[in-house]
Image (cartoon, rainbow, N blue to C red; front, top):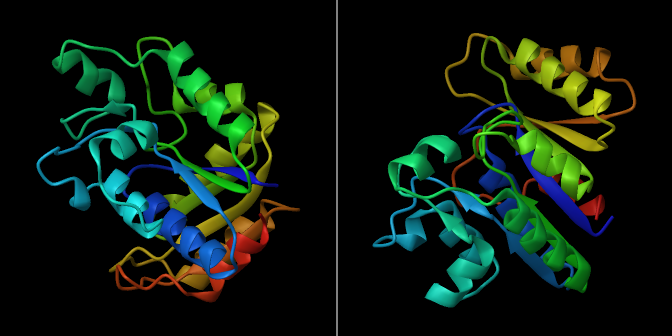
Length: 225
C-alpha cells in the first residue's frame, strides 16, 4: 500500500506520534512522503509548531507557511472538542463532501507514500450526520489503529475492530501505545488483543520521549508501505 489512514480508539492515543515516526522512517529510506491531517481541533494559529499539523509538517522538513498548513489541514478549529461541536461554536461546519474530495485528490496525485491522520476515535462526529467511520468508509484505504494500554482499552479496541470489520475496512496493524501509569500491563494488553484479532498485526510501542522516532515499531509500520 502507498496510502494509509491512521485512526484510534479515542483521543490522545498517539496518532500524531505514530505518523511522525512513519514519516521519519520512510524519509530515511529515501521515500517521498506526503501527509494530511484534514481536520484538527484545538488549533492555535499563533503557535502552529505546537499543533499536530505543525508537528507533521516539521517531520517532513517543511516550513510552516499558511499555505502548507491549509493544504495539510483545511479544517482548523480552535476549541479542543469534537469537530461538530467545535465548528458549531465557531459558526461553521465541516463540509463532509469537500473533506472527502480534498482527501481523494491527495490519494490520486500522491507520488509515493501518503499518510493521512484522522481525528479522535473512529466514531467521533465530524458534523451532524457523519463520523470518522463514515469518512474512512468513503476513502477506503488501509488503516492503522492506535490503541492505549489503559484499563478499559480492551473493550474499546475490540469494539473498534469489530465495527471496522463489519464495515469492510482493512486494518493493517494495531499499535498498542503504552499509557503511562496504567495498572494494565502493556504486553498483556497486546497479547489479549492478538487473541481476539486473528490475522491483524498487533505491535507494542512503549512510552517514548516525544522526539524518539526511530523505534523498531516505526520501522515495521513503514514496511507496510
